[in-house]
Image (cartoon, rainbow, N blue to C red; front, side, top):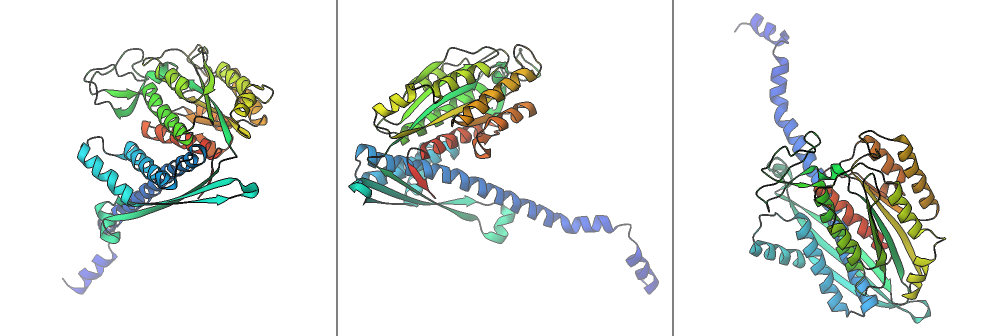
Length: 406
């Protein structure tokens, strides 16, 4: 090739885009892979932190309320941490032997220290510190730079006093409208035939196999995580009171607020697996607000009878839609009524958690407004995120009963 030809080649821009694309493609893929791993690591850290908080809270509460010895509280914290991490993230195809081995590995990677202190007035206080580490597998591209795994470390510290208890009074207001019959993205391997309902096929089933978990079934699973976490934070059964009400375009008969989670758990478990109807949360919000408002002395009296110096009031409002009433169209009047109820509850000092589960824009807007803060608002797009949201709600509520610092 002569000098003239080389000069023409260097000046020719015709193939530069393809050449540069070929050169940059591996770099682009590598950056994308690293970004994905960073996002996964942050999400995993948040999950582990929430689980560690729940374990520390439960162990600290057990020491204060049940007089559990320090070594037993340490064991309890490790057991709760390992069990919940397995329940939330373990491969569903994992064998029992592999699960047992992973559980032992988590326990060995967890250090729990605890101590007893004497507070003002000679009251007994307990402090428990939990530290754990988790090795997250990286994708092959990131592994070339950072190794095969990255270690995620979290620390949670909880303290509790024997003579100071803060109760929890919580009311669940749950959507059981027709759209809660629609499927999630989670397959249901426990059944071989089913009716898979979707927005396009409702009220007829579009497919029969593979089977997918419906939204209402995902809600039941998530609610059980909340109930179990609350139970663990209240081993003596003297702190937590829960009620529940469900709604379509009509308000269903509620289960009144009572000690523990058993009644509310039974109520949620009994929700129909193929719910029908429109969406109107006005009645459910009224029931929840009336039960918890400060002018109603019922909760204050019940909590005081158990020796609780104070108590925190919570509403958990969940929907997967927008306020339509008995129709298929958004009703601005109903939407405003719910907003008014939320504002009244928040002004009265009630904390509101809201969960917009696979909800449309107007549903998200409503629940974002109703939440006490951005930290109390959740927007899960799949079953896993819904379960995580309800677990996080339980942890935040439990922190009000036992002091937690991270």
